[in-house]
Image 1 (cartoon, helix red, strand yellow):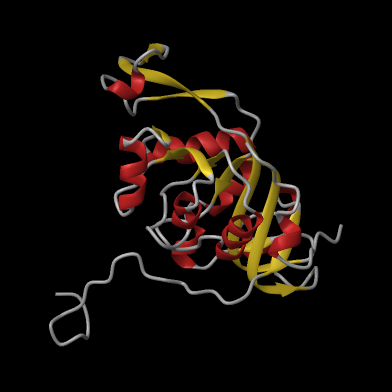
Image 2 (image 1 turned 90 degrees about the vertical axis):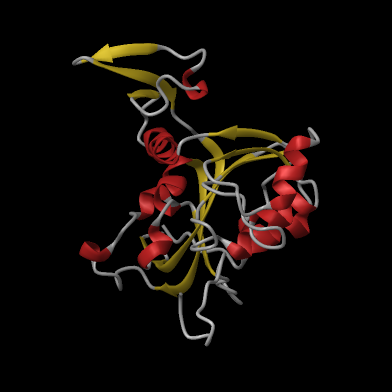
Length: 236
């Protein structure tokens, strides 16, 4: 039951060209920095990345985009990455834009063994084109397929050797559902503790959804967009 691996390099060691990867995080909050950097160093290409966002130009998934390692992005919000825009417009990157709540449910459903579900989000827009539309209780819904990925990369505040995870505040965001959706789920944590040290009532994601875990290092925890007052002490 000990799922600990030495570091990010070992954790992503079997990820190969063409893999699909669900990557946790919201903006730059709670992203698996160590795992992303290890993929950059590994040099795998042709990746399909499923993530709420695409990072920024020089950090997070943006590092994979810089090196041409990503073939396709499945995302909700990509507005902070100019490189992403240029790659899409030039035809070098495929993109599947998904409403944010729908993306979260696609991942959760995939991890729960649910192949598809109906949602009202997107009905009457291009999101629904070519998809089954049904009416329930007088309201139209569109059928969405769930998402399963070859791997998932997530980041938690604390975890134990059995893979039980605790997230801190905003970093909880997409990480749990991404972990659920991966056939092989890899978690990096700021603090790794022995099994039994985390109160079961405090576990946000049970270890059954985690295959590998390691303690990360050198987290930058960058802020995606900082706004301060003219005196530098806070927002206007």
